[in-house]
Length: 230
Image (cartoon, rainbow, N blue to C red; front, side, top):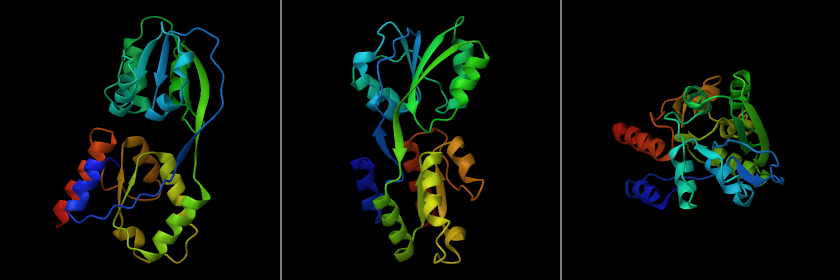
């Protein structure tokens, strides 16, 4: 959580507990030898773990989300296309109407990446070159920290920025027989966007979801909900 947002919550006596539900770990990879017209960065982590010494400088850059664009610009790279909707389905819909002719797309991503982009683009005749450059891991120490917190403290809100974060949370909560009977009924869940919300809604309700799918707007919506409850 950014310091300015953390202090905003602290000033309002809102205690923020941060427990990593997914830590990103680099996956060793080699330079993509094939040429490509586009490179798709679908998260800030993809930018973080990509070796730009391997970049085809003639390729156009697509980026999902304001944070991903910001990280790229801080590295000195211009973004040629940013979908208005910051999730894979929105990317596919917008880019397919924008792309001119058959394109070859390079997509570096996490091990857990959904297949939406690959399936949609290849079905429309485009070539998609993939490379796994990082993976998400839920460390045992973080699992134990979450378990201890849930059994010893009262949790009012929980924020999820990805379906995998929800899966990690469920991995700890589902086996816990000691949770209070009203745990889920009183817990308010916030999801960063529709993909994360859809995963959560298979089991629980989502109370908070920003219209713009990024963390600053998720924090803003959370703060608004807390203030309305006061």
